[in-house]
Length: 131
Image 1: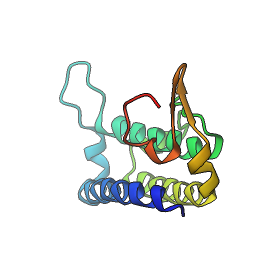
Image 2 (image 1 turned 135 degrees about the vertical axis):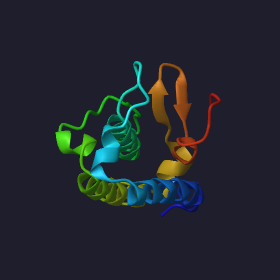
Image 3 (image 1 turned 60 degrees about the horizontal axis):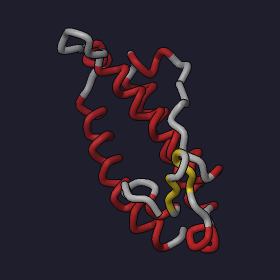
């Protein structure tokens, strides 16, 4: 893996640990919890975390970042086991996608986020400025 991406990925691994610690403490019935009002249940939020990760995975394959992926497995909102398995699959996809990004890609390509806003691959997770 490119050294710049590896440094950034170390930060992502910390997030993954927090996510995995959370799912280790939850039971299926916890995924149904909502504080009320217009707030979605916790399971919906957990599914959304994975959908965002999928957007990042695809960005390292296509050099375009789009957050329009929607998981179609309803168990991701109600089953901790389904979530853990999916998260593990997404983590493997992320590592494979990062391994496929060459040093030349990191040095010479940009990830398209929106009109007029492009980032080098090593800044995709962290930067908010224009490059």
